[in-house]
Image (spheres, rainbow, N blue to C red):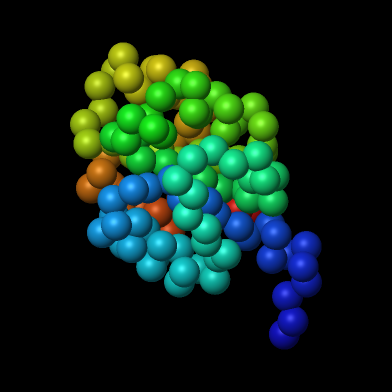
Length: 121
């Protein structure tokens, strides 16, 4: 079966994670879903083709309201963020800035496949 270009574009995931081990774990699970995975180290305006983003909110470069707002306002991304500990104040800030789902570090690798399936429907 040949997958059309349009179908492939609908299954593109961008990962904003600097921790190599975590990025490897997440990308391996997403690769099982036959998704096209890219790693970005900063916001990129050519993100329109992507429909899912996984963001490490522990990183100062990614875990801030400006980055998340730019990401959300300039794309149709479903954003899954993860953080070491969920605190109501930071959860509310990340949620209002554009995160659709916020998980703990431990939960992201356990749940990423199911979340990605829901997000790319």
